[in-house]
Length: 306
Ligand code: ATP
Image (cartoon, rainbow, N blue to C red):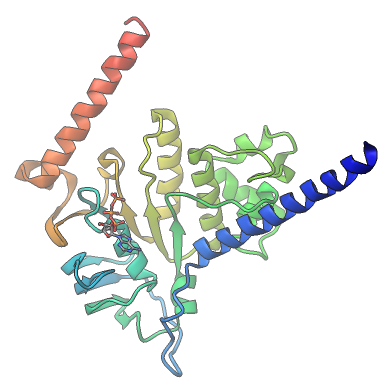
């Protein structure tokens, strides 16, 4: 019996090792998300960032030529400001962040950072300048310290912890079984969506990029988690140029400008107050989300017997 058990045990180990490798490879691809068809121009210079002002100039784009997604989108994010992009599901909000990273080639118009066309500079320097907090963070099957340090390999332990504090995840880590040495991912501690997003925020704080793209999680978070994440995000966005891809309008009320995408075009733009006063698409989205939130609160109240 023991003889039979041992090979099975060994095979289980091999299986787990392979599964871990596959998970890491998936993670690598998701993070790098490289498109081999996009090549640097010969002798392309590095992007020279000076403030990190972003401009989309009449940008058109389609994943499939038969179905245009962006039909001439123009907007600016001045250096150090935060611009939120909102709009109905499928409007092309996340596409805008993929195009800024040059994961796909646009079919018309121009995207510039501090006046430099992103097609003219090296992809390495472009991606180095932008920090991304994605909707779904992929964690490596390693310690939580490793997962945060991924933002900058030469960061020391004190810097890792300072980033975790700012991202409001330090207390959670301190109370994990082995603190910063706790294994996470497939084989270790499973983190909730909100916790993973705060790990991603800590990584980005360590990377300290001049430009930030925050792709807000679509899934509803409880209001406590939402506040914690919001606080962490506000800290990272301070003094940086930031694009926030927003699904919950309550989180972007304070943005310097809100761009409303619809049908592949910029339908409206302005501050929260201006857009509400206009009574258009944004005001409609806002009222619908508010009604849904109020209904949810009522149901929660009934559950508590209030
Ligand atoms: P949501 O709010 O639901 O996340 P979004 O506004 O971020 O939506 P995008 O993810 O930018 O929307 O997608 C815009 C459109 O492009 C959608 O219709 C989507 O189905 C399509 N799309 C997205 N990624 C791809 C892809 N890799 N290949 C083909 N079509 C895609």
